[in-house]
Image 1 (cartoon, helix red, strand yellow):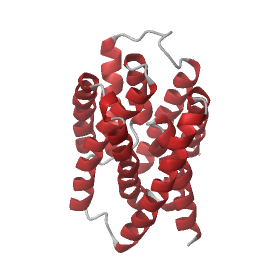
Image 2: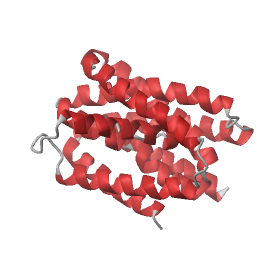
Image 3: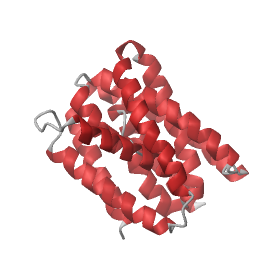
Length: 238
């Protein structure tokens, strides 16, 4: 019971961050959740909880979505997403995936913290590779957002457009993941119960985060998100 309560607390707090930034919630939550409750429960629950945040975000700011960028991101992230599906079939230890994932989170959080905007120019081919890697990570851990945001931060400067465009892309990919998880038998009675509670908490998180996004500094919350990402990455390297 303690593990389940801790997991739900992680969902609640991380999705406040997700509602504010549009990308960091699941990436922050996943490493803590893997340690608290394990992949088998954390991955399917966090996938659908993220949908509960992304759908209202996208709908509220539908007019702000940059559809060209949405299609471009979805194409490259989708290719990486498909590659991740086949990578998961290889006889590789889950612990190795965890370590690599942790290192990617740390590297990404460090980059985003020190180079948060357009001051550092990245060539498009490099951005495309970053999107592909984001797709692989999203397939394996439902948390490719930190990598994808490197691309988005270079191409989408307006806050609502940034959040809405990313949210729309996650809606597409997370719905595909939901179908995969159903087919893989992830949804046990325990998972459904935690999911129902988690979605309820995420709705509360959404309103708190949406209010905070209007009243408080977006940059300050981004920096907080990067620090939390760095800590969560370290957790997987323990």
